[in-house]
Image (cartoon, rainbow, N blue to C red; front, side, top):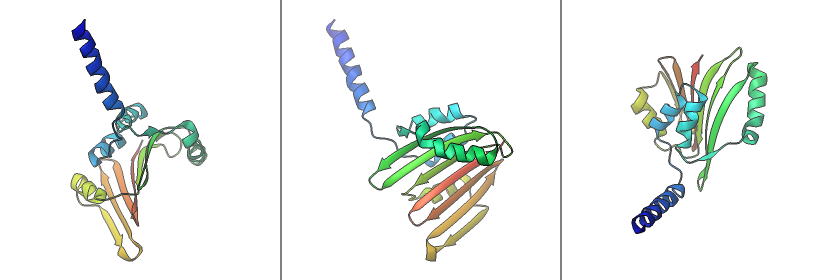
Length: 166
């Protein structure tokens, strides 16, 4: 009985620590794994590993309505958001049907840090690269095995879009 009580106590302590763990930083490997997932369910499983707040239907309804009106077909979407002291990060994944059916992923961060360097290390030199130091703007584009990767940085904010035509 005493051994069982100790075991239960250890499990509860371990679970409490896991639940209270801070949200994970998004690595380029995790970003690319999530963004190249074959479907929304697989992307959701990957994204939930981050521990970020899952966006609700209310969070995404305006985007979804605008996208469906533009695309002419339904879209499945899952997204996450993390608010930090330096600003908000968001990550979303969607699959659409319609005249421009595709699967895509977008990651936005106010702390781009070495994100471009990590993308270059993983994908190789960009197919297209432009840097405008005067206006603090950088863009890079890669096309690899039917997947388009686009990095855009303006000032201290960056956006990565990854898409595949279906």
